[in-house]
Figure 1 (tube, rainbow, N blue to C red):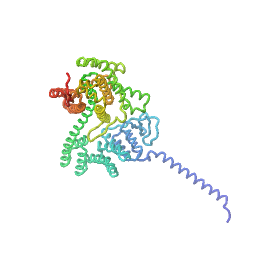
Figure 2 (cartoon, rainbow, N blue to C red):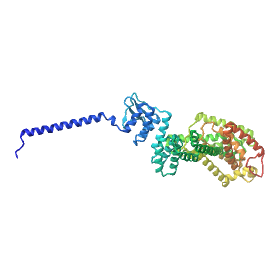
Figure 3 (cartoon, helix red, strand yellow):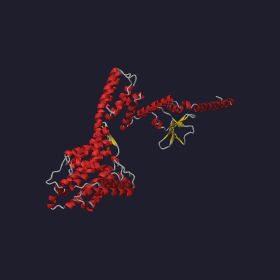
Figure 4 (cartoon, helix red, strand yellow):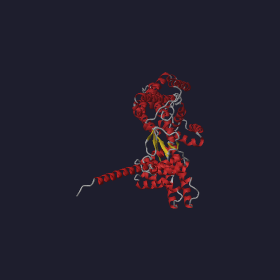
Length: 551
């Protein structure tokens, strides 16, 4: 076979070169076409995000639904930014931007960082209907979160918005849920949606009413009360019956809440009065400066926390544990000095004692104003005393709960001290019969000094507790001195059990009278009732028994 001629070889090379040139042109054309058509081929998520830039409520509504159902990880930041007013859009470029809580800006469609917002960018507007849609969308996005607390929060958000668009997500989440508490939250959210769903069947609405009736809180009653009037007769009757049952349930829980508030107030009164009960009961001294011992305890707590904040911040959660013994020692030492320096010269002269201690209270207040200033001082709550939790339909704050526990602990320790220690036995002996105790060799003057110091020290401990729920100021003690005297007189002078019962009784009575008569008239009513009670039982609810009554 003869080799190809040069003419045929040259022709083949030309064909090959032409093919390569044509292929390159074709590829270039495809590339350019794709480049120019990129915005049109951006995808459903990008298209949905771009609708936020149209400044149209209906487009925004569609965009929310499309973004929420996209499954894109940027969906939650976008919807959250929209809710918080941090979603901006440029009407010229149709680009949408998310401004983070830290001030950083990203492109909502791509997540790419952006240096600054365009000049024409403006926040995406919302109306009330869209705000409900946003809440429902956020709720739906977190319904399948691995964190049970987030799932419950999402279900509660859907419950409040009762947006029909979240029903499918709720059903899917409910089918997969294993936690009982989360499943209950999902069921309640589903019931809220079905109750307001126009095409829901009568059976579904009756089941929804039953679920809301079982929930039995204010939110459930609000949903049932706001139900449109065009409901089937059976649904309307069931809703009316459920509203009546919830109202009765809420009234019962309101009484329980008031009782808890009363116990909380009673624990505060008991702390403030228990030291006074010892002082007044043993010594018969009306100490008008007792409230200032409470105030000194509160300022001791403030000083302890200031030192810890500046030098040992890691110990802040232990600040109250450090402040309690220090407040007891400081207030107790001042109490002993008052008894040794003033009170012991005025025994048997109650009016002069009252005036002297009242003047002393003014001196102590002014001394604190000079040292710390007249304004309120901040005393922080440790982490274990912050927050609250729900019990049924009532809210219990941790600081009030711990104060109640602390008060009962102080009461128990004091009872044990009076019963089982030598000082306690001597105090009881002096309380019941001072002359007989002196004849048995008990140094009544020493007992008086230690008793006054003990009562003042307990008042200082009360100041530590009160610093967690009240303003720390020079006038702190004045708010509790009158109430403390009422507790002591009502319960029985010198009787600790009487002081306990009196404090909790007056606390609960006060909280039940306040909604009816108001705070001021409620206190006046309680004072009048105590005066009438004392006319019948001059020695109080639990009178001490002794062999002699001294003039």
